[in-house]
Image (cartoon, rainbow, N blue to C red; front, side, top):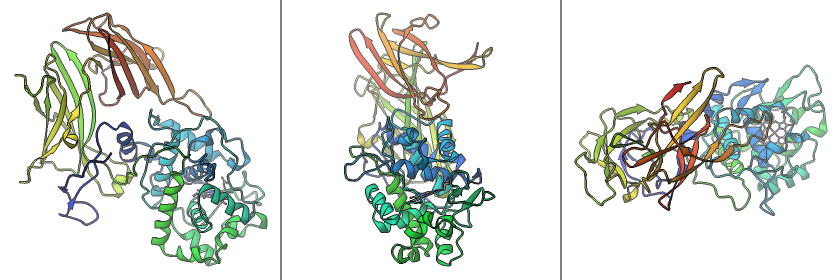
Length: 531
Ligand code: HEM
């Protein structure tokens, strides 16, 4: 749920210098929105799509856009089934999904370990389409997360070039698009890439032609339209020697070229493509709810918190991302203890220990955005502990300080009895075998009669061909001999895969159950040890 946006004065690239401008915020915690923002604006997938890089005679971007369309093509508006649900992972043996680009795309999506408990392969395919379009100079498409991955193949309903116009019109109707939108969506898709001879020998009949591009530019632009209207097109689905497979010609001309004429305006083309491709990637089975569309980063994104207990001190690490760089800005973290408003002698405010420049994906760079991340390492009295925290931001420019308190409630620490101890957990590198694992240590405010279990989410799949599925494992932790109990805390441990990115913890302390969900293993880098 969105909280009312705060107004701050920022200089933004759109020329609104000095104009009151606010970035959106959300009610914390919302790991799904935070992760979606993170993948769109601070993730790594964009690296492969920046500047429309070539691969296999086409571009990575063309391959990512095509797989998104093929995955979505299973949607049926009549019964609400299918859509962008990663069912493509089970459909690659079909002639309609032929092409190395499909495998390469899924391998790209797998390689960066992006999957999370609330962000599946379907969200990754959709994110790939957003990067694909923008990376070739096309529109910035707002991104929503929340798709649900299918566990089996959907119907074989991807349109094929030898089918007639009526079949295509019906296929697009079934997918939720009108005949006019069909013209748009095909033109928008076929501004990237082309047709491979090896996969479509009946379309590209000359064996010398490895790939026939749809237009003469690599960019996401309306050249596919203008070349078609000027009769200079080389689009093999328009002018190919096999009349039966001239599906683009039949579709483009189906309204007397009216829609294609309108696309001679780059603005109309870009705007229409942005809207249609957004609808395409947001086509999901009924019952699946997507998040709000993200078209700019959220302000005041909080990471963590993460705790460690040692020598009578409970330390807590958290980060706050604040939009728009201001080197003079100071940010203070404040907290309340668990006994009301009492502030112990050790204090209950701390300045940031570090201020890191945020490096945005090319989407953020295109939008001209800057941001800083403030790191806090608070020393907390373990007896009185912490119930909630908040921040005070001072731009030091004469304006009033801004209180960032999660819409008034503060950032609530639900419980302090069971937590991943970030000072005691370790990244372990096993030098003889060149393998690694995480020794996770959970601190418990209780004695050895307590019990702790963790459920780990490992995005990395051992599979070498799709489907690429995460590994979810529940493990009971053992008392940790190397971290003996101290100060009323007892430590439990287990060795887990080095690529685990999120864990759920559930503990039983003195008959009371405590849980922590979606602890983000990347908030604090655990110390490295080699054995
Ligand atoms: C009637 C509908 C459609 C037909 C018959 C069709 C057919 C084809 C064919 C035969 C190829 C060549 C694939 C290859 O050789 O790997 C292709 C490529 C492509 N299609 Fe479509 N397509 C249709 C609609 C769409 C739509 C709606 C989109 C996306 C919005 C799209 C995006 C692409 C892209 C990006 C490529 C290039 C792939 C590459 O270069 O690797 N297509 N299409």
